[in-house]
Length: 359
Image (cartoon, helix red, strand yellow):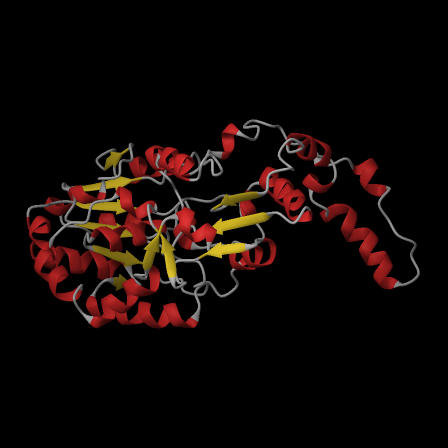
């Protein structure tokens, strides 16, 4: 989560004597480019001489699977980054994986012996069985600054949040249900999970099972993207418009509630662990995660922090809603919880980005 605030970006620019400029990618690359469609006539021209069965398979597959960015859109991307090829170094958190403009620019910079620097985005890097992000970063970057290395960067994403004390939790009330994103399309590195399904995710069953009084103090924050907003209609259909929806995000959202309910290992769990807000996780799909993190997840079940079944989760909340502060104070101090927290947001010596890059 190498997300820099404006004041820190300006500070970094001056401390580096103008050598490091932190800017959002949309200020450099086009925002609304309409990608060209496949040119099948052009693709039929891409072939090799067929001397055996493998050559035939190659000709059948390659013309269909070569990326648009490497053929139809190649000229556009190459033209957009032509004035950036001379940069000696570039840095990013996610663009090396998800931004084709950045990929083109990085390739040109690497060809000229420049540097591509990657800062870890999210606490789940390295905990997935087949982690494409790790593979790409390790293969195509010259430096990777990971949370799990001996030194971490200061002024990181978490610094925007304020930690809370156990005494502050006593004065809070209400439940926030914070579902992960809804997906209707999947890429090559994504499996289909219930948690991403607009109808099958566990949150409806959990909310429906809450006692009437507790339900009146429960809010739902839909994941902030267009597709996830489709689930707003489903919530209202299922619960007759009685459900309370929060539309706006702010960095103090979690602080307002006694407990937060999530259904995924993603950015929110890292934020919650850092802030100290009580939370539970409802998820029975562990196939994606590696053995080390799954072992720690299973231990969380003993503390009633992780639930496989939403029925068990709402029964726990109904019985223990008034005791959540004391339950959290006791269980968040256990070695099980501390080991899990350390796995996702390890405490390392922090240095400025400028110092890390110099070294």
